Image (cartoon, rainbow, N blue to C red; front, side, top):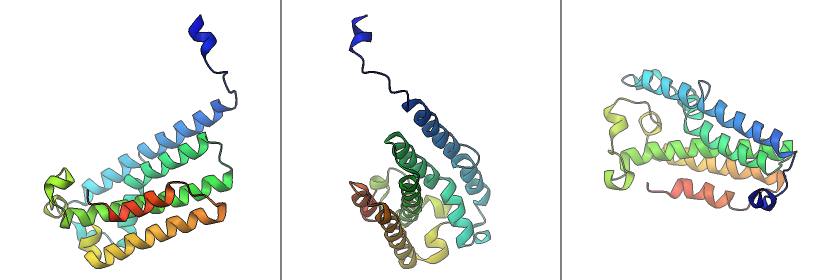
Length: 176
């Protein structure tokens, strides 16, 4: 009984936010998100030439991008973001997710296996479509930087910041 009395009062407005956050994460994990993107990735292995830039972007938006977007959006929903703030966070996270994946592809080419925690060159060996394979390393780096620029620009109209800009910049400077 003491434990129940010590609890903070229940915020009745939190229940709809929790349900919305759960739905965002579930959608991002499902067939329109991570699972669907992974299926496309596995199907494309061995035939990277079948992908163009738009196809590669769409695949990655469903994979890592969907999970990053859902994580950011769920946090914004739980914090009580306005619709405009939520839209800005979703745009930020979509660009951040793409930048993360582009850098991941670059690291697969340039990184050391012991740093990456996976075998470097694994994507090329599996014939997976990647940004460096399609655009080259230099253009891939530029594309990742442009994603970060667009991510930061998405925050500006709503004056959002905090640690988000630092996280965005870390994505393009990471080595693992």
